[in-house]
Amino acid sequence: MKKLLYITGVILFLAVCYLFVNFLFFDSWACYSSEKEINSYISKHDTNKLKDISANNKTYEYLKHSKHITIKMMGDNQGSGHIGYYPIELNHKEASLYVNIKYDFLPEKPKVKNIKLEQ
Image 1 (cartoon, rainbow, N blue to C red):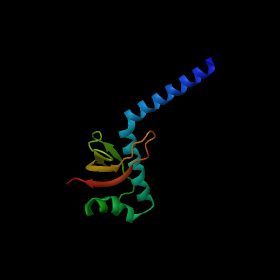
Image 2: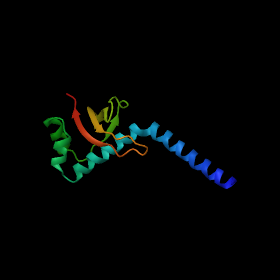
Image 3: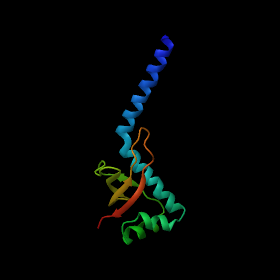
Image 4: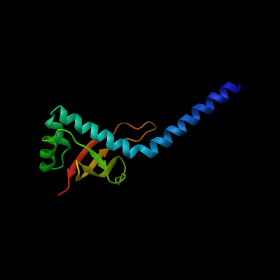
């Protein structure tokens, strides 16, 4: 009986730690996965996907002619609901990143909805 209580306690502790870490680092993970997704489109020369996620022609041309991008998060999620909005630096240029977020017990990987270079 003591083994069962011990195992249950360890599982509960690990679940609480996972939720706590997920809560603290979700914004960083969202930007990291967005950077990885965009770099995947760039390396595959997937211009259709780049066109879909670009808010305007300037952003599309910039992404299309880039070899690799780096996203630096300038603030936390300022969106609401299932849409996340992050002010970012895209290769040292100010930009806005919108991602689709699905929150569950195990959140899904955020998908880039829109990215826009600021003027």
